Length: 242
Image (tube, rainbow, N blue to C red; front, top):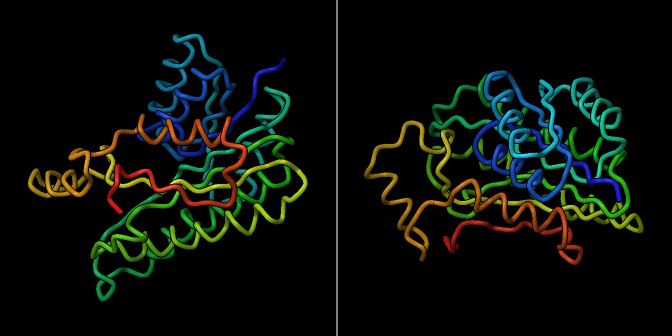
């Protein structure tokens, strides 16, 4: 049997990198789409290759439909098709609603919402029967932390995509789900937080720790492979925060 093929956006760092490494360890061929850090993307591919996996990296702005289409086309050219699409790319800026810069708001919407829609649209056209589409939200849509409003709002909108797209793909045996991590030890999450804040956030769940990228990758691997009866859902991977 030919290996299954996955596209992972934001797949070169943090949670996305853990997903790329986990899927290749599970035998997938993986296309890693990254926004701008070529060094990190090359390092991730090298790590995967050294471990015996198959991956390549391609730069793309997920808010640009032409660039995203090029990622899908290159993946099909190299690996023969697409079975799984994981859209973990996202950006976050924090400030109160009253003070939030609207240009920055537009940038967040372009990446987190428009980007998720574009990736989902192309995945719906491309993913083979038996495949999976997985987007990312956040537990902040439920915990409602101050200063997170623009980020949480885009992610709440992304959650609405999965159940609708799952119904639109009826009969094709393609699952569509959303993963909503809780506080996870990534550069994106930890930047700007002091030790006391990190300790408080780690204590919000019964496990009394922050999540790790590998914790989230495990959930994605489940949804990408054996979880055929989980469809149209938002899975909160947060150690029990809510």
